[in-house]
Length: 381
Ligand code: NZQ
Ligand code: ZN
Image 1 (cartoon, protein in one colour):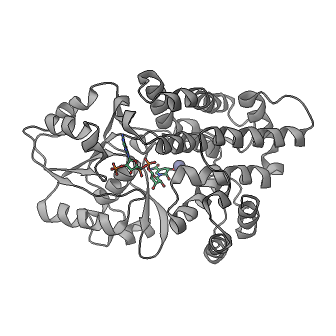
Image 2 (cartoon, protein in one colour):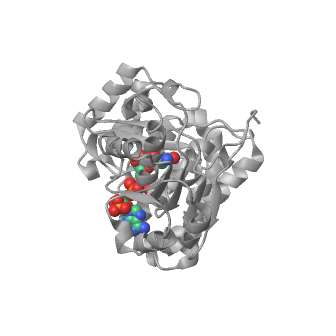
Image 3 (tube, rainbow, N blue to C red):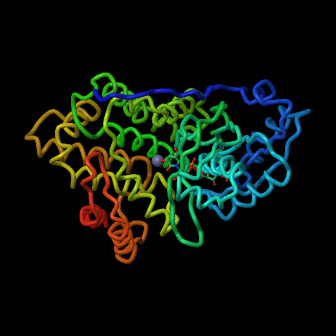
């Protein structure tokens, strides 16, 4: 097991009706900015619950943080925060709203441009405190430091790190109105978050391996229930908690991490606008196949413990495990090939060019270069 430091200070408030607790958790003496996406919260009653809980608080609203939040939009919120003396931020919506808010909170306390802050972590100088009401289980953003920010004018998408949300409120009933495609992408994102932290080496941390397998197995079990009935409270609650547990640091304790699938997926989104979870299920089977020698023992362990693959040679077991994984993604109703989304040669060429130019090396051993990225993508055409 590798050395590690674990500290996750986010207070998780989970369950039916818990949005009302905002009135106890928010600071009464601070000016608050409440941030939103495009309006889903007005259609599912979340907005009304938030406004009711905020009675008597001093707050302003900022609307329009889009999926794959754009720095161009976030700059407007930063400017408003500075102008109106905002002291606390509350994000209400999906991962994009919260990610955007993480950047707004940090950019509001520095003089540099928000995109410079994304590109140069050395400019980070603290943050306004922030919290969330999360309505889409997927990113784990409600209980982690990460944010992923896009730049419309340059067509880039990069990670940014702030501190953790002070608290996050998760009411599974808020998810009842999610479009089925977002649910499929959220289940896929959760699955792949676990894989990024799990699919490396065996015997590094037996406890964390079992923990990660437990979250993945839960996602696999609950997915058909969630897809059959989005008003099944217990199924949605299980899905929601799985998403949080997928990327809040627990399954990363003492183990190496990969993240190649995400890095390649972000480029597909940056160039084509494809939804995050959808990009991941296209890329992951390619990463598993191309890295089968390095990851083989772990793929076999995964296949045996999660898919029940026990027969055959090592290579056959790896093949069957990759097939079962792709089959699960297809059972969510997602495409697993670039061609199904009409993503072609030009996009692959540009992604490979970007990795070559940046010299970025991916994976737990930093040995996936632009040539291997190309092999992975060509296998997924
Ligand atoms: O904008 P509104 O109108 O709110 O609608 C949203 C949006 O159109 C809608 N939605 C959200 N909750 C809803 C709902 N519709 C009906 N009912 C509800 N309860 O869903 C659409 C997608 O929302 P978005 O926030 O974009 O989805 P998600 O939570 O999947 O976030 C995706 C972003 O998170 C980043 C991704 O790269 C992408 O930019 N990620 C963030 C991570 C993190 N912070 O740690 C890690 C992830 O790997 C990921 O990269
Ligand atoms: Zn993700």
